[in-house]
Length: 310
Image 1 (cartoon, helix red, strand yellow):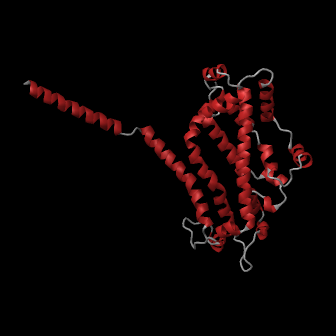
Image 2 (cartoon, one colour; image 1 turned 120 degrees about the horizontal axis):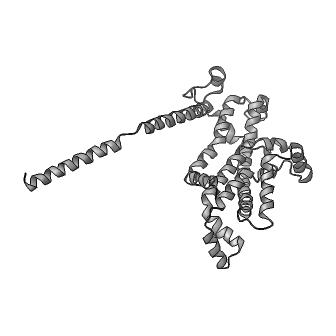
Image 3 (cartoon, helix red, strand yellow; image 1 turned 90 degrees about the vertical axis):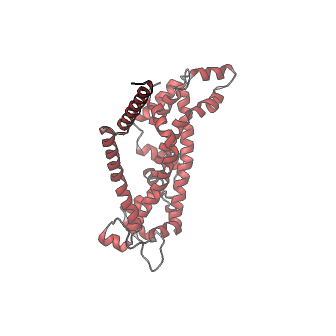
């Protein structure tokens, strides 16, 4: 066999083996196939109830009362959304939830970050007492009656949004997650900042927080979801209906049909109770669903940082 023929045969065999290897790489494994099928099935199980709620919120009240839910809203009606976005009570509830979530998340993140930083730095005479102080509420709380007396009799915060914000300001579990993340920061960077004359506050704001964006995003998201969905604390300290947050308004509407008579409607129309419940559910979960994509890039890394012992 001539050298040219040998070279051609070798090249052909190489191309054939390359095609075979490519086909093998492209062939999905059984685990991958079952994983995709399982995740897809779980996604459908989660999306179908959500879609039924969305569809029901656009279905006429009379149809909901007689035939129940349907995949396609027939007849189509936006009466509940018109009531939500035109009624002053519902708009004030939405504004109250937005205020409680934004201000509460900002204050909670600031308090949790400061407390976690001091505990993580193992400062003498202060880190250990603060660690014990943060750990005790994970085991037991003071009770509902002392909390009510503190907020209403001593702090005088009844019918104030801060009556909902302050009791939820520090979550001990999130404090220790952030402590674990702070302890994984490179000590060499912190020592070099101290050598350059930086104080503890400068290190915290210029080095600690910028390097901890993933865990800050995760903790902030947890606080935002908690504040947005909170209704029981508002039930304890809110008696003015015009200051009700959205979850409390929805809870009252679900548990008490007569509460719907307090909502403003036209004189010739009745309040679409069933449709309004579903529409309020959609409006309530909408902002939180939109918040997850923005925190997704930090979510996995932040959870990993907080869950790994440093």
